[in-house]
Image: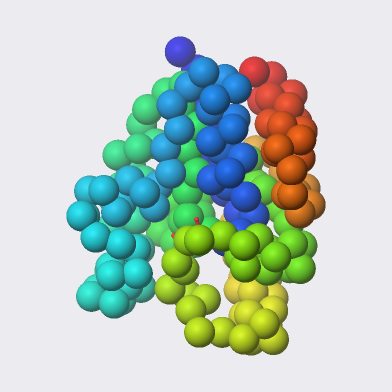
Length: 176
Ligand code: S3P
């Protein structure tokens, strides 16, 4: 048994896409914290934000992080905000090997546009507002993200080949 791998990074960095492929390649289970939360709460992340506000969501997110991060030999993708609340970042680094998927703002925006995921914090924003919001919140979040054990730079993910390349790089970084 060995420590799980936790992928962190801003919304649209590719945590779920790369995480799923990494888990497949390692023959390990994949866990997406947002999906886990939705399954446990029997409602969507957007509904949790609507009904309990962001503070309520962060509390649930913290509790559920503790449930999933105790496992070993699992690839876990957490939400973009997870590392930035409570002692979540230190907690994750204690229990797993953490990897920050770092992407530029244009790459994040491109990925956000092509994904089907509903993201309450980004809802209704024009491209200009999106760039401004991401710029501001990325600046606040980067000190938390930079605490990860490894940092991997991500360019736009267009092809399966791109995903496979990142999977190989993570395997090298983590010596798996
Ligand atoms: C959030 C990111 C989302 C989700 C929630 C809040 C954030 O996850 O947890 O909408 O604060 O960055 P993804 O990063 O998987 O989109």
